[in-house]
Image (cartoon, rainbow, N blue to C red; front, side, top):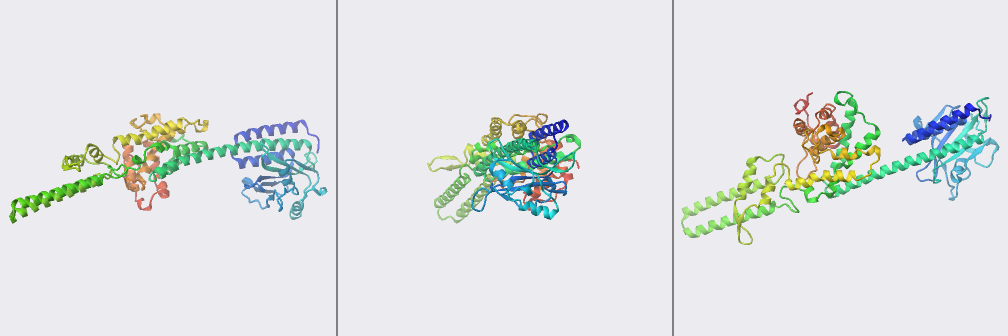
Length: 542
C-alpha cells in the first residue's frame, strides 16, 4: 500500500475524533456497530467488511452486518436484509477451540490476523471464502481480522476487513501495519464503549426489575391494587404521547424524547411505591366495618338478640294476660311490626356498610338513630346497639375508609416521596420523585401532601394525576367497588376537571385524542365499554 500522505493522516485523525464522540453519545448499540464497521472500511480503503457479535451462549460468532462495495452487498444492520451467512463456531465438535476459521482464531486467541493474500495461505480454512468467490465472481485477497475486546479482555465481537485498495491506483493491496494498529485501537475503543452501554442497559434493567419487585410486593399485600401499579404508567404514557403529538394549544411546545419517556415511565411504575408500608387491613378494607373480619356480622348478632328479647317479652306478656285471645292477637301484631322494623334496620346497616360514592346526610342520621337502640350484652349490661367507632365507620360519606384510615392511605404518597428522594438519581432521571410524588396534588392547591397548585406542578405529574383517577374509576378489581363504565368514568373525571382538581388542558387532550378509548380497548372489560357522548362530558367542549 502506498505511504500515507499528510492529508490521509489528517483525514483518519478526524474520522477517529468524530467516531470517538459518537461512541460516547450514541446509545443505540446496533447503530454504533454499523458506524464502526463503515469507519474501519473507510479508514483502510477496504472494499468489504464484516462485523461479528458473540452469540448469547458465547459458543459462536454471529454475522451482525456484512458490506461489500464491489458487489453492492449490504446485509444485516440497518439494511433490513437478512444475513444469509452461517455462524462461525468458536469450538470444535470435541470441545476444543476452533482455530481453523480466521475469525474464530482471532476471537479465541485475542490476536489480530493480517493476511496479504488468502490464496497463498494454508494456515486457515478458507473453503467458505472460496465458495463465496465462485458464487459471486469475486476475488478475495487481503484480510484484516481484529478481535473486539473490552478493558477486561472480554470478547465483544470480531471486525473483519477484506481487500484493501490503494487509493492512487485502485488496485487491491495488503493492509499495512499502520492500518492494523489503527483498527486495533478502534476495535478496542469501540468494545469498551459498547461494554459501557451494555452495563448501563443492565443497570437500567436491574433498576426497573427492582421497581417491578416493589410492585410485586404491593401486589402480594393487595392483589386488588397490584394492577394499578401496572396500568397507571401505561395510561400516563398514552396521554403523554397524545400531548406530544398535539402540536397546538397550550402544549404545542411539549415534546418527549426517549430519555423523557424513560423518566416518566419509571415515575409511573414508582408512583405508589410507598404503599409497601401501608397496612394490609387498610388497603384491603372492602366494607366500612371491616378490620381483620367484617364486624357487620357482630351487628347482625345484636339484632338477633333484640329479636329474641322481643319474642321473649311477647311470650311473657301472653302469660301475664292469660287466655285473652284478643290481647294475644294484639301482642303478636306488635311483635310482628317490631321484628319487621328490626329486619329493615339490619338490612339498612348492611347496605350502609358497603362503600358508595356519597352517603346522604339522611342515611347518616338514620345510622345514628339506630345506634341508640338498647340491647343486653353478654355481660348482662344494657348498652347502645352501636359504639362510637362503629357509628364513625358506618357514617363514612364516601368509600370505606374513616378519617384515620384515610390519613394512613394518604401517607403512602409522603412515604413514596421520601423513598424516591433518598435515591441518588442520575441526571436524566432526577425528576422521577417530582413526577411520582405529585399525582395527588390538585390544580387549586388543595391536594396533598404539599398542597401544590397547578403552576407549581410538572406537567408530567398532572398527567399522572389524570391517569391515577381514571384507572381507579374503571378498575373492576377493587375490594370496595365495581368498575364503572367508560361513560360513567368520564362523567366523574369531568367533574374533577370542573372542580379544578385536574388540568383542564390535559383533560381536553385526554378526551379529544380519545386516550380514554385507547386505554379502554387495552385494559377494560368489554362490558364496561359503552357509548360515550363527548358533548355531555363536564368540563369538555367538543
